[in-house]
Length: 167
Image 1 (cartoon, rainbow, N blue to C red):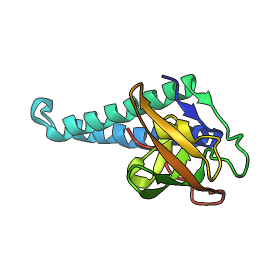
Image 2: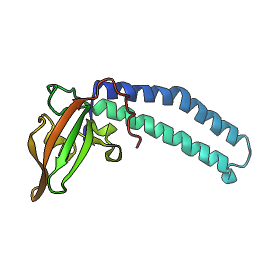
Image 3: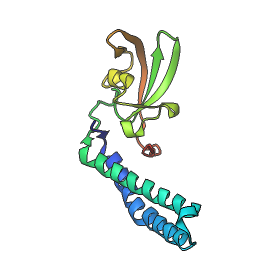
Image 4: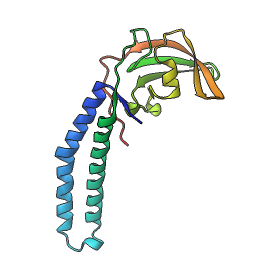
């Protein structure tokens, strides 16, 4: 599956790759060298832990580079009063009689526990490009879904940038 990323997401991923290559990789290699110098490698826990850390860093670099190669760059072309990427949306769930506030983001920044909903999630897809006051059907599958009402949409421009979700 191709990730949908904004230009800001791409920049953050490139910065993380650079940091991992220049700083984390160097530290990991030094840790492996130091642990290797302690002697018998078969019973050297420090050596195995250092190798594991080094391999995890290299794996993360490969994952991020692959993500960038296959990513689809998206931009928010929604109007100021429409639901779009990086906008806060207050949504009323009719079935539960509850209201929640979400920020619509790309999948790599999605974190439902932190109120960040992916534009690729069922609710994200459903409310995208709708306006305050719209009643929208969120389709979960062929047989199930629910209605929500968009209460408000506001821009989050100028707010703190959030980090790319770590896998």
